[in-house]
Image (cartoon, rainbow, N blue to C red; front, side, top):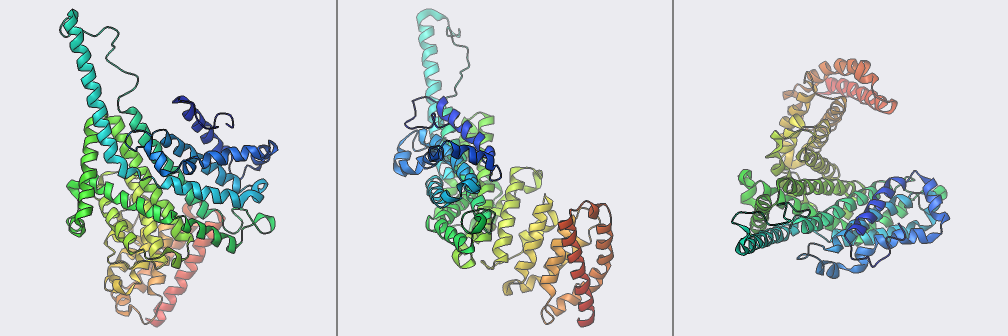
Length: 512
């Protein structure tokens, strides 16, 4: 690895791929739990770590302008490959920073990691799609014109009309569009890997799970807050929000025939023009590229969408509410994106990319509502997903988000409908998991715990009677196969929730 990653690269296509394979293999080996690898790496001297760090910073060292001057019309060129390698090395560096042998280098490692992520997330793959489409169309047309010219010249020399050109099999090892498609994929996947790394950086570096300072390598709250400040100062949350906006645009572009009218009416001219441009690019790609390549582009778009939402989720969870700033624009985009995804949600399976994106976006919505970062305007989408989400986790997130939305004054008029959805899930004869039950019970207690709020709704919903009937059913499920399948922590959590439910029902029976 240290030999093959020394820049400048030889002018070959195979070497960067070889280096990427080595980097990808190192990610699992250099996990935060495999301290043996860390010890072995440092036994070779700090130069080994420096080599990985240098590769991680290769993209940011080259600079955005230089990187975009390479390759086909700004699609990344060899810079696309270097971005992907830098992203992989960033994942390695984060894993190593959690290991005890690297605690003394942790500060410098994370500082460099944030710098690298900033450089990679500057690229906006969705905004590059029109260039990809134009270049692919041009390359394919030029190739076909070249083949036609060769055929005409062959026939002019007496080769016979319609005869095959000598030594021409009719197939080619490299498609004319393959290089620029690979460049776009490299830029896209570098963003995807970097988003995963950033999500892990936010999630795994607090109170001991990340090492760093303090006794025994535990990271203090002050150090974690300093890390969050560095992430914010580098503009990483802002970059992610830019990718989120792009996802809403490309989702609209891919489903223009089914765009909800209310979304169309809410768009300004600039937004409509962006969607039109992306729609034309997507149609060009579907027409010009082989089916498998067009499907690949769509898959990469969906994967980046899912990672964007998941990464933003971890930032929302761990950043203080004040540090998140005004999230109203983000909330509006999330609602539009979710509505767009739902236009094709009914036909997709639970493991489809659309389903995974919906799950990720709903979990992000849930956290924004929980942290009181946004002002909800309706609960229709959440109610729909609470009842008909493709995966249990999607339904859980929706059931967690619904009561949080219902607590906002602007949503009080929808309280009865929200309560009905929550109770309806508890009363389903089948298909409601214990995790969904727990989310619904906790949500109902949060929503109706105040004595002088929603009094009429509590009576109209017959809340006490319906919950009283549910208590023995919950107890029975916890004593049965489902309860026995839970681990000790999950079982304890459910028993605690059952006790809370009993106490809540008893109190409401006496005070309603």
